[in-house]
Length: 408
Image (cartoon, rainbow, N blue to C red):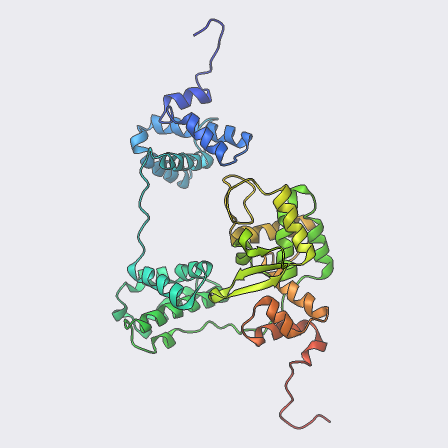
């Protein structure tokens, strides 16, 4: 060591060189850089990796047992362990350890663990639902969450399913979830039972044993935001840093798109010459929406000035590392963040209220119920008629004559 040079024994570099990351620290740093982590985040991740690898070495773990080290450290944090000194492990260090394992898998240093297999019934149902009913992956994901606990409790032999067991399962769930969530569980399980009936695994009519949640459809007044609130939300999305947010909010509130539809948009779905957006809706139905000048300008501004240079056909990408196409949850979170920035106090902070707002705005501006239903892509006229409740004058277009005597 050169004379006069002082190196702290507890330095990040020293701890990395002494642990399981000794031969992989530089590669991990470059891997983070390729995924567009910011320089400050990379510095913090390397510091956390040094803390985690030091803890692993002190507890007898090496690169060959790195997954065991992560499992042990995760269990330690979950048990309530708190950092005792600077450089000790904490929750963020354990998460960085997991990220380091992902890097090692990506580089082939570690073999990828096989995914936990789903029950065969679940796999068959998913394929049947895609092929026979064209259900979207987001819908299937919701069904999966409802069906897996059902199979775990009742077993994987449909011949043993009966009405009493189905009712016991639903009554047990009723005590743990809301009425709306219970209704969603019932929808998923009813679809699953119909699959079992269609494939001859269950007797016909067993799906009628599924009790219905005590909720009534279309009885409430549609939730929507007034025009003044929409102006405030769009104002909260002004500036170069919010170009993606503005484009997404406009797709939601002007065209009434669903969060999942926005997340799935690709460059191939936009026809600039014809001024239209192609959507793959429910049941794999391909539909077209008009691309207005306001929405088109917002999308072009995002593509030209804010979209990361990533070779992906998806239109909207995440802004922070790791870069990837956004999902419907990201769209909902983005909308909620816009509400907070605009100072709007609304109990419903998801993206779907903007779809309701688009429908009611079209009705208030004289668009017919049929045209609103066409834009929203409703299959049933009753769904569109639900929005007429926000305007008493529009109710006359759907009101039925009173069957009794005329009023005095």
